[in-house]
Amino acid sequence: MSDKKVRVRFAPSPTGGLHLGGVRTVLFNYLFAKKHHGDFVLRIEDTDQTRYVEGAEEYILDCLKWCGLTPDESPVAGGPYAPYRQSERKSMYRKYAEQLVGQGHAYYAFDTPEELDKNRKEIPNFQYGLAYRDGLRNSLSLSTHQVAELLDAGTPHVIRIKMPEDEKVSFNDLIRGHVSFETNQVDDKVLLKADGMPTYHLAVVVDDYLMKITHAFRGEEWLPSAPVHLLLWEYLGWKADMPQWAHLPLILKPDGHGKLSKRDGARLGFPVYAMNWFDAKTGELTPGFRELGFLPEAFLNLLATLGWNDGTDQEIFTLDELIEKFSLDRVSKAGAKFDFEKAKWFNAEWIKRSEAGSLKAEVKKVLEDKGVVVADEDYLLQVIDQIKDRCVLMPDFYQQSAYFFELPKEYDINAVKPKWTDAKTAFFNELVIGLDAVAWQAHDLEATFKALAEEKAIKVGELMLPFRIMLVGGKFGPHVFDIAQLLGKEETIKRIKTALTVFTA
RNA sequence: GGCCCGUUCGUCUAGGGGUUAGGACGUUAGAUUUUCAUUCUAGAAACAGGGGUUCGAUUCCCCUACGGGCUACCA
Image (tube, rainbow, N blue to C red; front, side, top):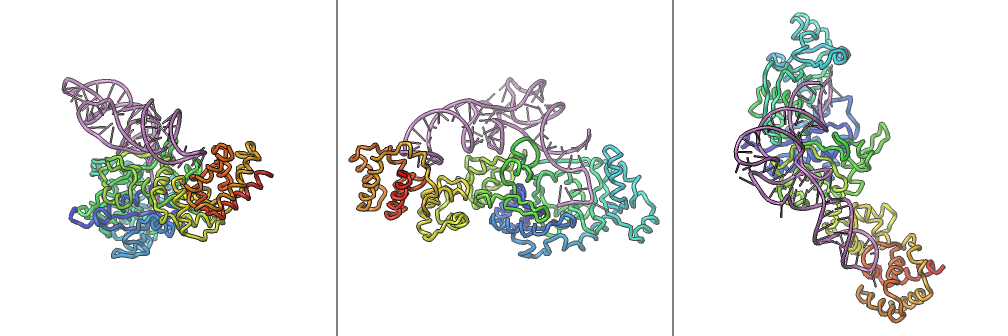
């Protein structure tokens, strides 16, 4: 097994938006594949036609693209093991299910869903298996003749695996170590549905085998069905090719307990999906990390450290670093509660560490979406350098930089008016004149400003805030003389004059 | 209920038979920033409980408790 080329797959069901945990599973798959110079496959598990959602597959592809986790093989990229949608592979599965029936490891079952519901309701701990299968309608309990008749009549039926009696199924999970199950406790899972589609259980085994998957990562919620899959690999005669399993810890709600769901996001005010997801049926929009203003690098970074660490104090990792350092044996076993505060911290760190140039396009979009005209991109770059340390999410760039591009929309008048004096009016009137002659550099501006203050016998501290409000409109932003320098002489003077009329009105 | 998995500061985690149990987010207090944020410094804050094993357990074993997952012709 170890000499085989590493091949992993992400196998989502196209039923809606892509959850945090889903992206983390993709990430771990991707990191593992790249680290071992293997292939990363995207396989769409659309075997449940009743749950199919229009646009979900495209959405998943878009998410992967945004994250930069491009599959080597996928429904759109194709590949040597196409097709990559299980619905298009439908015809492949039946023969394996029939093979299992022939071998005595599976059987036909004719019970209707209604009958089974009734049993579940009436019999405590009912499960279709050892204890009850003889009393139900299937090819184990019925005579060969009866079964043939039912089959000939086209009676709807499923194929179920026959769990063996008194056996222990165990395997070595890459994250959890030794895990074992008693077969008597596992029910006879459906392998092939009445509509001819395989269930996940059959499809995942058949496709992992056919696609030569070497390592299978999935959420911990799959652990209970692992024995079914193990047995299938064995019964189908493929045991030597079975991938190594790794069941990832779950991502939990920040408060209370349980798996994180999109409802928690709505309830607690943070995104759960990677990108906005619009449900055409309900008209409901579920917000995403991307639209909220997360950088994909930060998103990946925070996901990577949710359940994994490299053993050092390092917390900020680039994708390349993650590929280099990732290791399954450093993935923790316990579920992790999602912490949105820390998620934002990751984003702020990434913004701070990013070059203005790499932020430019996204910042420009943020500003233009708000109606701010960005005419000069070099100017924009300088603005970004001035303010990126104070932005946590990308939309913060609007609030933090709009005044660099247009007159303040409003002035924090309460911060200046109560203490305003005629002397200050005189100061700023003279400042306008004085400024006109200054070489336009922050430190020269500051010197001129302070000299004039001294001459007028006004404390500099009394003048700094009004000056800031004049240029910015509020009590925030970088050093005021840096702002003035960037704004330019003409604009600065204009803003002083404009604000003066407001302050003295 | 049954089965499976798990359990170190509020949260994410490091560590591992002998440590002042480390880091990060958040939080508190200071410093810097004539605004705010950043930054810096300091502080509070954890080994679920009970039995073993051992000279010595937070670390290894067992039990209990608690938490989570699964228990569909969904994935």
